Image (cartoon, rainbow, N blue to C red):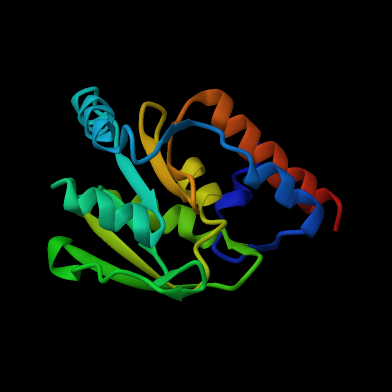
Length: 180
């Protein structure tokens, strides 16, 4: 797939008909019955040299409550369009304020995430919405890493970054770009 997907000048407007792809659970679900077990998956990912990223205020907050500081955390200070739990920036080596408007994907996050991995743990605070930034996360993280996102009223979804996951994310984005 073309490297232009991680070009900072690309902001992809996510068409309504493509939301079906992001509303389905694509990893392993952790809910209130098994949520504490998520830490074993995180530790295993780290043990094997991978990185762990979180997307969402609640999932980031809940991991921090378990004593886990993700390598990359992406929040927008909102939960279900209301206020979100406070995330202490002092737990991270630094933070960036980034713009990602509703129903868009700022693909510049891809190269920025790659650059910030060397300074992990790193926090991204999104002005707008972080709902769709799983795409740049998947493309930025190396295979063997993971990202965890919140599924409102359901739990947290743990996604192992594999070649298949990267290929699926690229395919969806290329279809959107091709339909412009």
